[in-house]
Length: 600
Image 1 (cartoon, rainbow, N blue to C red):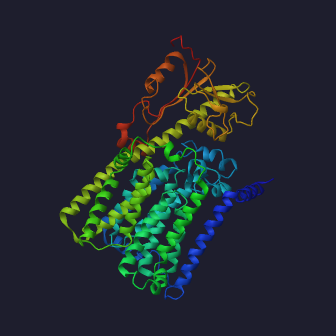
Image 2 (cartoon, rainbow, N blue to C red; image 1 turned 180 degrees about the vertical axis):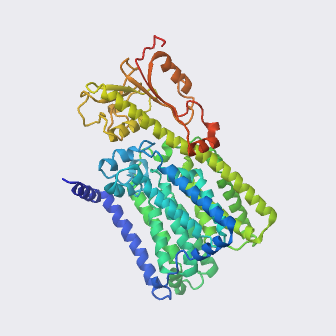
Image 3 (cartoon, helix red, strand yellow; image 1 turned 30 degrees about the vertical axis):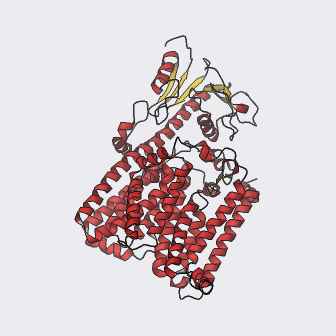
């Protein structure tokens, strides 16, 4: 069977799975119905697809501004250089050796489509997650190809961000885009491959862009764009439905109140539905998502994802999110002040940005309610919050209120410095973790070539089944002889994973078939592999990182040592975050000839 036949067969099998068929049918039908009604309601209006205004109608103004303003021209060049460096860092030393990359190395990179992540037992329903890589893998299976899709989304997002908020000067938009690119949650989302937040930001940019265009041009084209963007958004992360319902629901309530819909309700209801089909359509799509979520998880949840990752208290979760990204705190304070001003009649309601802020707040509060914290979870919140604050600040900049402008400039500088600190650390941590595993793999390749007739036991002192599984998946992807559940056990030439830990069914983790075995301590012939993490141990471990390394340095022979080096652009990133990096940060070691009673 040739490659084309294999791909076709995999596509057919993928589409024939019941959960996939159900989702795709409902997804397409519900979107089609909402768009069909939009076309019907639009048929009596003067707007049509033929009347779409130029999408990027600021292009001429931008070129004129650049020709007149030397500093703007210089700033634009610097921004382009910044974007190029950003893209270079994404591509540089890219490999499938990071956290959760078994979702690639065991599936799409092996010619098997990754199933839609409909995980009923853990209460998860995000069926579009990682599905783009199934398509990409048909054409190319390299890290370059997988990251190229992220680059495409990044460039589209930047262009759309430079096109929205037309009242803001181009120079201010460039600063805004730079701030967005430096956000830690934004960096994590776009540098990584596994994070659905990247897709959410991409579709949010399209969603907001179409909203602003629709407000001006009342075109069916942009209305359909909003519905399509929403339908994608809903199925990348479950709490997104709160953002959509919060946005559309608040708009409907405000519009109904302003129109006094309760007067002559029966006579006016059709006109209300017709004039507000955007918001009603968004709510309908959200309700369809809720139906699918409930029907796929109700009564089937064992240990939910949220309870498995819950923290000590919701207050600590809230504080951790604010500490990780101060822009959230600024957004909350400004939004509260904005609501107060609207109540007192000081401000006029913005039916796009104020309602987006309501939806954004609900999305953020969902994670507080779930009591789970990971810094990139709030990437969509950070994205909308930054744009929202830029919209608020634009009025201050236009009116040239001196002290307020100075305050904004001060906050922008502080936020940017804070973002660069955390983002630089993440980029280096990601790159060096991957590089450490790659270099260790190269060592193993050389070692195996001299010992190819016997099994080689790899002992992992950290006792992490998850990390052992991840490394097994990467080695398997690199065609190393790894023991898998269906293989004959202990055939000569295999790499055998061991640790001082009990593994049910001799599996590193229950959800992957890679085998791991218990061993009280390493034998003299074992290779002892240590990957030190990017963060210090939690304190629950019996030894500190330094003590762990000292133990094996004294009682073993060191065969390999990887220590991160920072050259070129990486040295600049290191300068911004060197206070978080010590001499053994993300070091990798391979020892052998372990003898606890003998000091080397």
